[in-house]
Image (cartoon, rainbow, N blue to C red; front, side, top):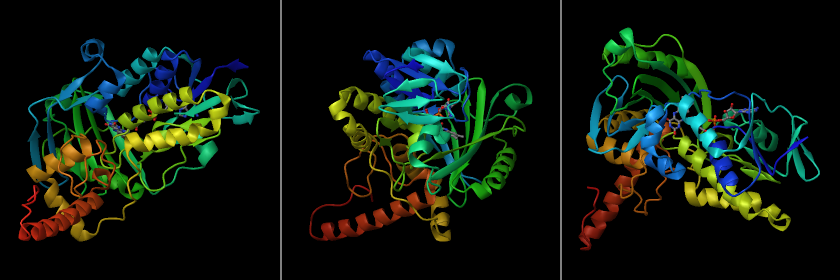
Length: 416
Ligand SMILES: Cc1cc2nc3c(=O)[nH]c(=O)nc-3n(C[C@H](O)[C@H](O)[C@H](O)COP(=O)(O)OP(=O)(O)OC[C@H]3O[C@@H](n4cnc5c(N)ncnc54)[C@H](O)[C@@H]3O)c2cc1C
């Protein structure tokens, strides 16, 4: 039997972040992954500056041997409709390639690894967790992404309500693909579906192009993807890539969510269903949750506190990632029509879609008049129709409230 103090299933950003913090504190950790690294993962590879800060990533060093695309502008619109350009005049995001990024994070963790080992059997033996009958530890971290076996073991199949399904392709830009590409590397392009149930993207990262579409509706994914690609070609944004498409799924942090902890076991990243509901961003919550899991494990190392592990971790998650977004119903035709117009409006594209939903920029307008939490976990782009109608309703409420305040002499709104 091979033993460690903590077994981590999955060597993606969540597993690596957890392993890094545990190893740095002197803990014996074993990361198990079914794949051999470097491995790729379907993902657009867009990261926010907080990811860089959280990881303490030295960008100059990283960019020497890896693709690192700075982003200072965006093009936001609707598929088949108009688009708005937003220029920040400074770097507000980066593009990375998961085939490079994940192996670097795992290497930096300095954790012991068992790669190419698929976890297929999980059992509890006394106070230990035993994997595949040969790996054992008192604490188990499920970091195996959407199909994590640990998550299924403690919480069954993932709930469908908050599911995003996506297809994407990442290709080296050369030949006809390069000649036909009008996408600016500093300016990723995001286009929302007409029914506001998802969005497509074109993201040029150095010598690579990533194109994809994610939706909250499995049935229409293929049809919407084809319509998106046909439109991109008509608009002469890209030459549609024919081969290399890959599909994947993940859960948004919405509704009741998954159970994130149990006796001596925690779930992190996609295994816990933590992607931000507003943007679909999953890498940052994966890293944050991995780090919080490590802190919680280190604090509850003595047996007396063991029962508190799951509780403490869940509380910290809520503090740092915000409470799960309220589940939203499907947008009606009117909301979709209004949303389609709003999304291509420069003000809305910048202050709502980008500042609030995607970039977590402090000081972005808050429709409910609350302090910005930093992590916007309300419905948004991944459920854009609901986000748009919620925003419009909040603005209407604000206007009414401000109207009565103005009447009573307390000054005008900062939104209108
Ligand atoms: C098409 C698409 C585009 C996306 N674009 C973005 C984006 O631009 N920015 C962003 O922030 N987020 C994006 N996301 C979300 C993001 O990719 C995920 O949230 C993120 O990868 C979660 O990291 P993780 O470490 O939890 O899981 P993963 O990265 O999925 O890692 C899980 C690891 O567990 C291993 N594993 C699984 N099962 C087993 C098993 N049985 N035994 C052993 N090992 C196992 C896997 O091999 C894998 O290495 C996107 C998602 C999709 C599908």
